[in-house]
Length: 176
Image 1: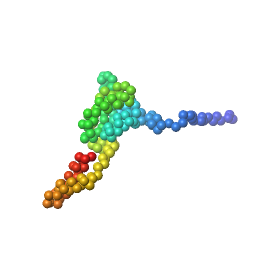
Image 2: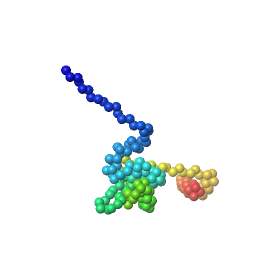
Image 3: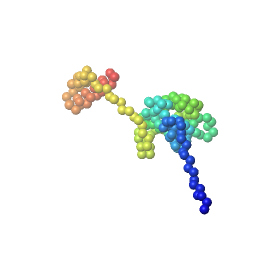
Image 4: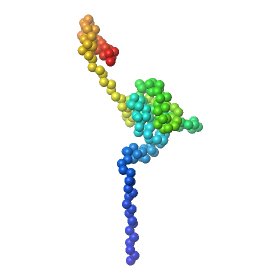
């Protein structure tokens, strides 16, 4: 009886580079879905806040880069934002385009298109914006006294309280 030939199992290749950033490990898996949306580089999605700045990143999310046939060089970057922020982003289109192209190293984007949506996004809240609530400054004792003095002549208590709150808010806003 001839000897049974057993398959030889090779030891898995070991990497000798040490630790790698998580973005490098995930980049291969993200490449397919992102390329379907026109993103040749994952850097635009993974480092969006560093590219455009925290102020823009808080109110806008890159959704897609669309390349039209025969349009030549550069595509259209489509950004998703809420309705209230759209006019402000509209004025910053050139800044966004410049920062994105600086990230790519060439004129990858020739246009920026702003798309408005509800604050929770479309498709049952899959897009979330990082809206940061602004802390209201506390009114000083002088402001409280001035607001109370402004509402003193009013007889109706509900109207007096409402006017006092209004005066307090106006005076607080004007001093800070």
